[in-house]
Length: 91
Image 1 (cartoon, rainbow, N blue to C red):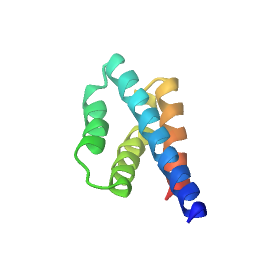
Image 2: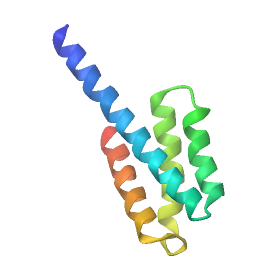
Image 3: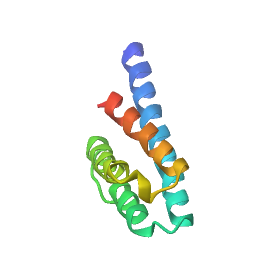
Image 4: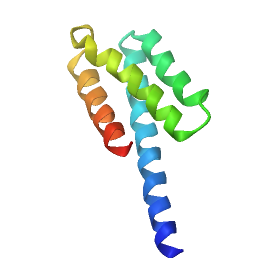
């Protein structure tokens, strides 16, 4: 039982870290004028039912950023890559 609790805590912390990192990206996107993709990412978190669904939607929108990196500054692309890699490893 203790081991399950430790595993759950680790997974929960990883998801929360991903949400915080995604929220940071959303704020940067808004500051840089990329409000549409920022809203899509935000809605992915707000209007999804379960953690896996949220991560899959976030990953989809991050891949949209990564398909056209020339449209975003280096900070956004780097953070999008980092979050996308972490989601891939978590799933």
